[in-house]
Image (cartoon, rainbow, N blue to C red):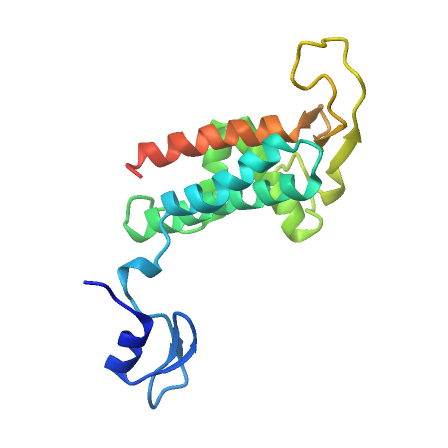
Length: 193
């Protein structure tokens, strides 16, 4: 049976605000109808949002905007995955940042990406209990490229690359993103998603 917003609105007598949102009669609460196709799954978010963003960032290595979109949406994927697993009582850790810390211990690339996402989100990470390897948004930057002697490489004539700076070394953002995509696929698969 195909559902529609109009049908759901008419059945409960609500007023439509925008597609998917209703105000119920005699209530001031905005709700989203609980129809199965409204809830985005972690796999769907990966396929429709995070993976395409990652592919664009990997292809356009010098585009800071695309790298940041990939970093933010890959980190969001792990938040969505945590919420889904916690809701199903598969993961008992209530806070996603604590669960992400466990994942960061399994993958250095995920740790780097997660810390970059947190620095971008918060603007600056203070020294605290958790050791962050990326603390400021300025640690993501585009470095102009130069001709490489390895002319047979597909990247020999790249005009630049986005880098992530850490105290130990700098990392090519596209390589980190690519490895975190692989890690995400493994995590989704391990939970049957």
